[in-house]
Length: 118
Image 1 (tube, rainbow, N blue to C red):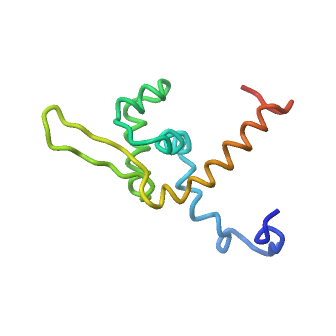
Image 2 (image 1 turned 180 degrees about the horizontal axis):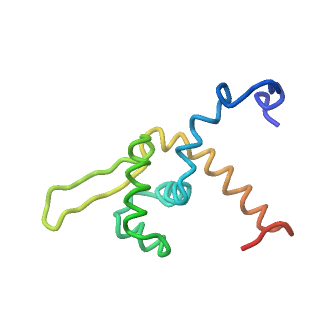
């Protein structure tokens, strides 16, 4: 465990839990997956939609807007016909990549356990 985890205050509650405020950022059903795909490079809406075939257009739009509001994702609109919109990680989103990488490594290990259910 990291040093910050070793010195936990067991009297702590949610009001002073350091991870509570960021839970909303990663709690969206598709947020982590969207961030994962955007970590691989800039993508247009249609590209993301093809990578997430089980997500409705409305749900993907909502998640992208929330990630933009949380300053994790940048939306670039090009004024052309037809309109072109690209999504990428912001500086804050890029700083989240080590967390995403650690989760990916943990997920791959977890999938090897008997507890994993597809």
